[in-house]
Length: 122
Image (tube, rainbow, N blue to C red):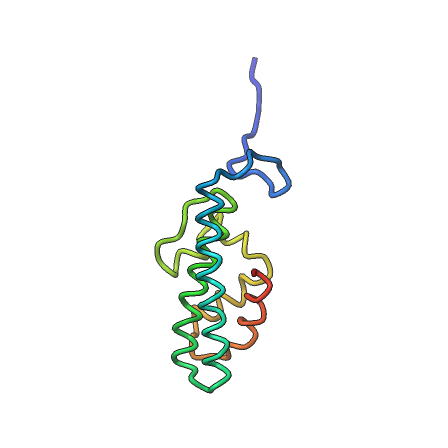
């Protein structure tokens, strides 16, 4: 007798899981605070037409946001900026994924749409 079954490697976002530990919540809070600072820095620098400096701050903010998303989803945290768009973390970015990918592929482009999109992560 044969039985065919499937096993999902990554559960849906709606599946209930164990609550986050105190250490995980602390890491999320710390990374989120750093993310907010870098995002604010990028916004201020972009407002003063210091676009190269704003892009550097935005790169750091993207990495920190990826780390926050990873800890919340109990996924491995990205070590490098390029890893924020690796699966399964890429799916957690939602609609922002295309903007992040576009920025990482062509970082000389406009930063304002990405700044607005990342603002919603706060």
